[in-house]
Length: 114
Image (cartoon, rainbow, N blue to C red; front, top):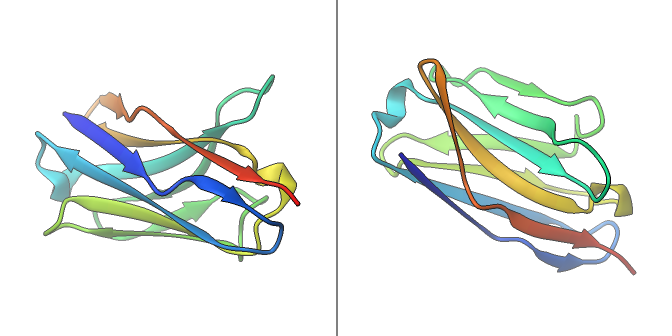
């Protein structure tokens, strides 16, 4: 199973970004997709997840600002990030939960700074 993220970059506070993750090598319809982030000096944290039924879950820090979505036909997942804050600065990773296993992408940097 391979995952490739894209869409990171440098934005100003209040702006938006959409991160993409394309998955290969799995039955995507059965996969729960997660977005994590890791800021310098901090532990990796779960930001959002979406299961095979489309049920979503968000960290309190991003509720109302981030939206996770998926397209089973394209084998892709996204996280739309609005009203970005400097504290959202981190490397963002997508993860595919396939049964008892988890597969990670390489990460994409998001920097929110004026």
